[in-house]
Each structure stands twice: as structure tokens, then as C-alpha cells.
Image 1 (cartoon, rainbow, N blue to C red):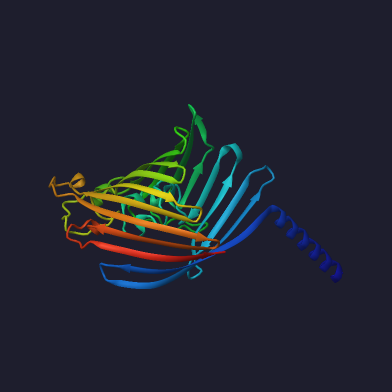
Image 2 (spheres, rainbow, N blue to C red):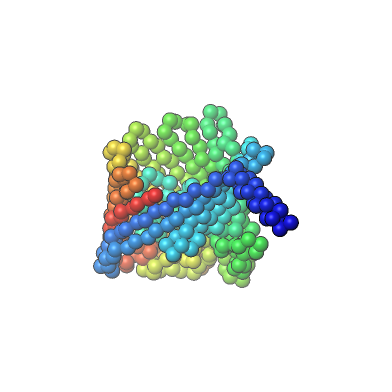
Length: 354
């Protein structure tokens, strides 16, 4: 009998393994980077390294729906982000995850760049729009639809507790006491002119204690236009960030932080990128961030707006599994502080992927 039991268990295990193999596929890839970075403000220099590992999988259900998952492990092999997507045929795709970017990443700083976004070294409003929607929520991407010859792709999202805190399976978010639910909507339009892509995005989250803490509902938004002609690409974008915080006065000579400082942050970016050949690309970006405190000052006191300006020159060269990238950025009035010293950032990176 024992032998029969063992035989039955072995057969069952073999059949389950066969079903799993047919139901989905798993893959793994990784990367490693070495950087040399300098900044003029602190006169600091450093050689740094990082590495990452991505595990992904996909499969198909009996009704024809498909699913995909990914988990990204960062330097210390801790989970940095993950997401699960279910594509339901003509009903579109639903995605949930933690720290995976959500809909906002499709509309922030959407100008062509050879290497990093300018926000990699200097915070700006364009990078912050809707960034609290990528934890503990759902996004829905319905099939693109035709509108008078144009192709329109929508991205919609909802978070029951939009405080940007990761929510584990079977649990609730860490209630902040301020922020309630959040919603966002993005539209991407193509087909107006060959090579032209347009996008517009908006996100809002409710404030559940606007009287006691001097806040109101938050709103962020952005739009962009990208045009590619052969090996050259042009881009322009604008962003608006209202954190919903009413202030009194914030001096022009005080550093500000998006999301915690009162006032309105507005960003405009323009860039041009050129693919020299299949391996080498170059880009130049200008970014202007305007901090307007008087728009939200409850006392009515007018103060001077502060412009934070960033210029970036970037290059990238690839050869097989290795990529060499570099940028030089210069920021005027960093942190929206009119007394702050101009800062120059320089970096060269060697990346390996497998």
C-alpha cells in the first residue's frame, strides 16, 4: 500500500507540474551599474554601484484572458516594486501593484531624453504629478478607440486610500488622517500628424480634514507633445501641482518641497534628441519650475515668485549588453530658493544587462 501511495503522490505531483508549465512562463533578467558622480554645491565626488533583478511571468486562462506579473528586487535584494496585470480581451487591462508607477509615469516629463529625466537630480513638479496613486490602487486601460481618425488611449485609476503607502495582501492602508481616496485619468492621442503624440493627465485626491488642518483637495495635472521626424525628436510639456495646502507667506529665500510646502508649483520642459546612429544618441533639455506662493496665501500677502531652472546635456552609447551614459545638468535657484547657490551635476554611468 505504501508503494501505491507513493506512486499516486508522484503521479499527482507530475501532473501538477505539467499543468503549471503549460499555464504560464517565467523569466528573469538583471542589470548592474557603475557611476562616477560630482556636484559643485558640496564639491562632492563619488563612485557608486547598484544592481537589480526582475522576475516576470505570464500566462493564459481558459477563457482566453491573459495575465502578467513582475517583481523588481533592488540593491539589497529587497522588493522595490511589483505589479500584476489581467488583460480581459475587449474589456481592457486591470493592473494593481506597489511602487510600480501607475498611470502618472506615462505623463510625467514626457520629453525625449538620452539618459535621465532632469528630476533625477533636481526635484520638479512634472515628476510629482499623481505619484501618490501607485500604491494600494487599481488602474484600468481600456482598448484604444477611434475618434475621427485619431487613436485615443485612456488610462484610469482609483485608490481608496491615496496616501502612497504600500498595502500588503489582505490589509488596509496606513491611514494618514488627512488623505482619502484618489482618482486619475490620462489620455494619449496619436494619428493627428505622423510622428506626433499628445497626452493630457489629471489626478486628484480628497482631503478628509480640510477645516482642521488648513488643507483642501489636491489636484495635479500635465500635458505634453512629442514629435519624431527621422532620427530627430522634439518634446514640450507643462505640469501643474497644487498640494491643497493653504499657507501664510513663504519667503523667496526659503527652500521648498513639493507636497509639503504651500503654494502652486508649475513646470515647463522642452527638449530635442538626436539619434546619431543605431548606437549613439544625444539630447538637450531645458526645464523651468515656477513656485507661486501668492496663489494659495490665505492672508492675501503677495510675495515674489521663484523660478528654478535646469539645463541638461546628455549622451548614451550602447554596444551589446553594455551601455555608457553621461549627463551634465546645471540648476539655478535649486529648491526654489532665490539665495541658493547654482549647482552643477555631472555623471557618467556604465551599465551591464543580462
